[in-house]
Image (cartoon, rainbow, N blue to C red; front, side, top):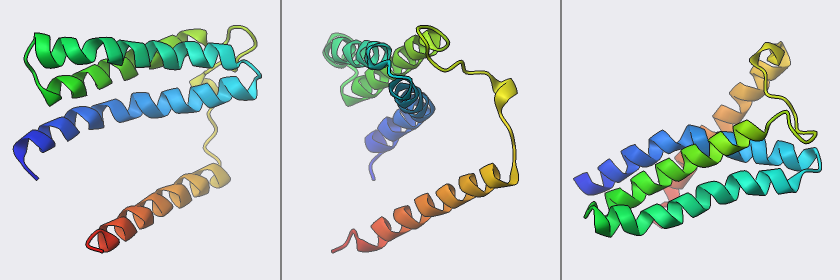
Length: 129
């Protein structure tokens, strides 16, 4: 893997928590029957990315690293819009006070992490085929 690819992946890796937050929040809004708010959040991030891609890539001459930064900024804006819409229009309120660390929840987290590691390992083994 060359240095450019590593730099790109470093920027994209920073965007992963925002991407996951957006995905979960969007699906919670759908669960509440409020697809419109979810789409507002996702579209705001996507449009930001679309607008910033050529500006950062060509205007600031950052190349594909500019695309990574556009993605990061788009993910942050999308997550911020979705966060601002929580608790409104019948959407679920996000509150860390409601988080419960039960044996079942911890088990599910460990199980999901194990499945991710297994899938990652499997893909690594079969990539040569």
